[in-house]
Length: 153
Image (cartoon, rainbow, N blue to C red; front, top):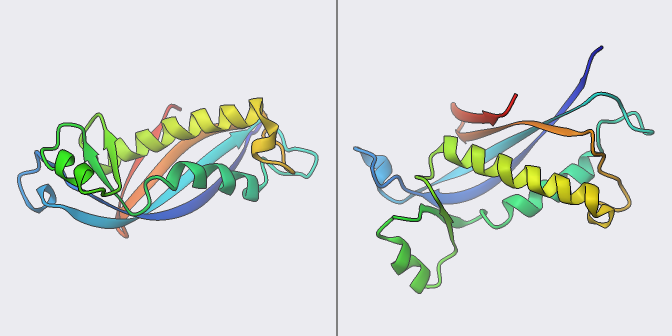
């Protein structure tokens, strides 16, 4: 029996730096990231959909919003305390904020968010989020020609 897949892309702008990088990426710089979120379901809902794209957008934007126009840093980054003291918008990760790490971070955050939407239907009203809709992958484009993907498939 087949399965249905849907995907939607989202963009956000953020800065980061890779402390241990041997070249230019060790300096603060930014990207316009594009996150592609891929879902699957064994069947379609009453509206012949895996999910409504508006419901998906609402949930994904809630995860992406804290990253937008933020500086994403490794917790050990020596610049972190100064940026936080200056009142800059800083998101702290447990690893260097590579595209691979950010893709995994988004995947994990979205898994939690989708589970919350099943338990709390008001998060996506007037839509519903079904328990059998599964997050398949997050593909994160860091530049127009480079991407990283995280999946548990």
